[in-house]
Amino acid sequence: MSLPSAIRTSAVDPPVSDIDRLTETFSRHQDKLLGMLYCVLGNGEDARDAYQEAFLKCWRHRDELGEVKNLRAWIFQIALNAGRDLRNTAWRRRRRPLVVEAEIAYSHASDSAGQNHEEHLRLIRQALGKLRAEEQEVFLLRQNAEMTYEEIARSVQIPLGTVKTRMRLALSKLREAVEGERK
Image 1 (tube, rainbow, N blue to C red):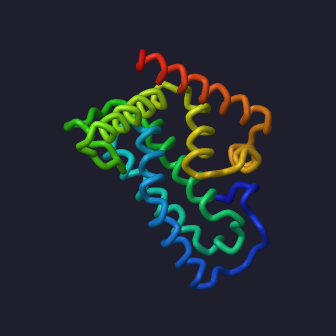
Image 2: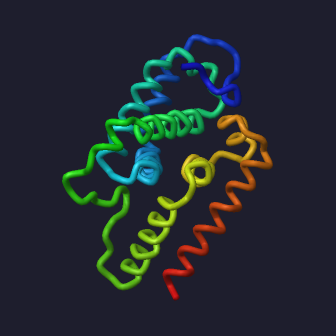
């Protein structure tokens, strides 16, 4: 697996500190990564599998860490690719989860404000699941990976205008879905 051209610098052997950065960055962004993968895959078990696969892919390419300009973006792109790969496997399409999935990375609040917040998050997650894969990808890379539009364009290898159009469509569909549910 080669690095996307958008996140390469020069070839340098990774010092131990780069490996520490990798594990620390993965740990720090675990909730966002799992949340993104949950949106892509639709259930927590597959999200956790893709998360582990993403970490293994990153670990296998730890010698390339010196080339990575934006470690967080690199990790999120690899995680998104791992999620897409899992989603697209024939085995997964035939498989059905045995249990109802628990929501990932969200606490359950007992007060009414917390319940309203949980309901709002549920509506957003539901609407995210209905986006086209291309729109979902751009939205998740922007929101969870905090990548710029330019970084997304280079990473996904599409024109900047296409990234902006997909984001605009995603936001419009999400806004419409959430507002429609509240009425």
